[in-house]
Image (cartoon, rainbow, N blue to C red; front, side, top):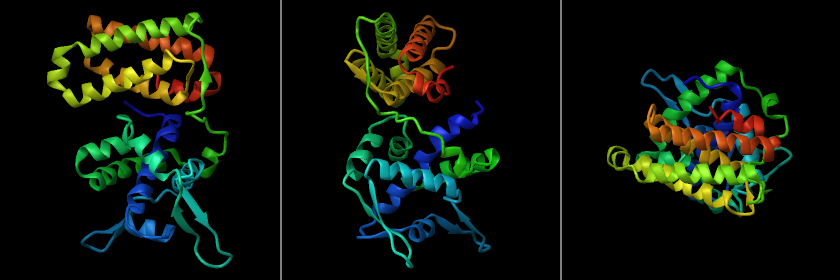
Length: 261
């Protein structure tokens, strides 16, 4: 499936963020961009170098997101290179991303070869960044704060409908023994995200981030149940969530629409 530019802008910075985290795992008091780039630059046998973090706009956006979550602190100097330190939110952000089955943090960890998995992914990220001609201007518009709480009420028909349809889809997926046998890891991650999204949808607040995780889980499952009754149930949940987004999350619609079919 081809990826459009807006979807790329939503997803790609997280892969660069993972590179920051992998670099910051090394025990140092201070880090720098020079050290980061050196860590992710490799020379071939014929001495040709390739930097896996070649996109400056993506590096800048990843750093902005890390600063936003207080995962990194910047130490400026009027003449010397800028230095970085881990921020107070470093561990919390890392744990949150590692627990999300749709995050590259989670997938890299599950691969058993985190650095190799990320390196392969970054080649594809960089290829698309060049294809889309990504610049810093692409990130200048006000970004969606996907974790900002959005108040909802269970008495609202769109909320009730989304809860009902998502419950049906979650139950259908969880009880499918064939899925559990043929793709156990995928099935477990899908069910986990659907249950978490359902829990949020049943509460007083939800966020675009939880809707994103829920939609991604439904899309993964949808691919496994094409042209089946359970596939129709999943499609019903997707449609109900789409209607919910229209009425409750207008500010995040463009962002979320890239994730919906």
